[in-house]
Length: 112
Image 1 (tube, rainbow, N blue to C red):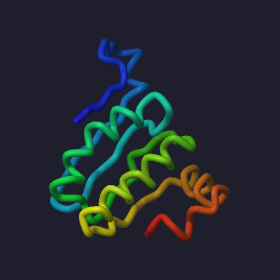
Image 2 (image 1 turned 90 degrees about the vertical axis):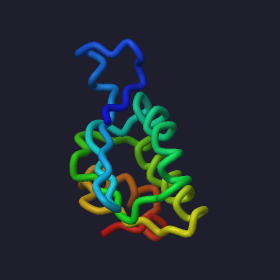
Image 3 (image 1 turned 45 degrees about the horizontal axis):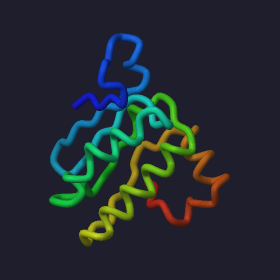
């Protein structure tokens, strides 16, 4: 499911998109996790986390992320914990791991 912050999504707006796909208990995240995309991604995943939170969130398809993307991971963790789940973030790109370490969140976010 392609999630775009820009409702008039043309080819240029694809950069502002993230892509989500659920397979079993794994949520696959692709694209950019930045200030332009995380709001729409959070809105799109709220019902999912409220009903059946994933046990794994695979970030191998993330091509770029900034602090907004890390904030999204924290919010997903909070939402999942509200429903008794503890998701693990897998295949976390080096760029995201660096931001997580700098922000001293590596003891909070369950990374595999």
